[in-house]
Length: 317
Image (cartoon, rainbow, N blue to C red; front, side):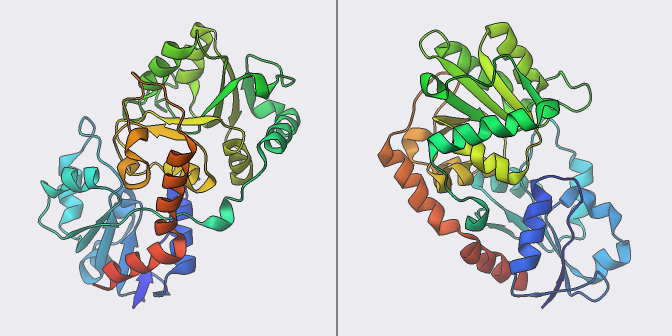
């Protein structure tokens, strides 16, 4: 089968997912006009394609998640006319879109590309991270010095954007930064905390950590190699989102054996031990080795080489 799939060019995870699919699919990747099937991992860009192509080609669309408060039913219905097959990464998204379409929906979890996530010794990772921060001070926001002793702190990570781009101060509701802050507020007096932030649009959480007087280091838009290093610096990763397709952090932490807790959304219950899927604003829990190993073993079921075959099978029809 000849397929066409093009990254949206947004310097975001969907670009990497699309590129990895194109590099690893067993289907022939070709141009829009030569293909039999269009595979959209970024459904919001569908209007960039000629209507005639959408009518003539099989259209497979990946729906990552729906935020009910922001869901544009009219836009969904307009695109749904052309869609032949949906793929969703979790049961929450399946349930959300099933009531809006009669088209077939297949649930397939995201994949992990092991080549991108080598493990690094925690002590070395922390020292290397300090060096990277020193070399990238223009991308650094922190209320502590870089000579901080990581070993004397509980290092908690969050690498997902949390602030709306419209004003760079309003919390992004679906990402649950208010829930993250509530979790931190509950433990700040009994844990010597250091919050490690990655990614962009972290203004809301940074402002709240400042008010709480909690130590943090934020490196803006670090490359993938640095994010990998940052994971290995952590004692815990917290996913506070209300709605997600993944997030990818769940798979990445699981594969790298980073302790992680998450709200019940996205792929949390697909990957994590049930005791690690909690209300993060009300509970603080650092997973034990048994929980970490469970997530790792589960993650091996979604390796890139295996999951691409599952995607290929659905695309083939």
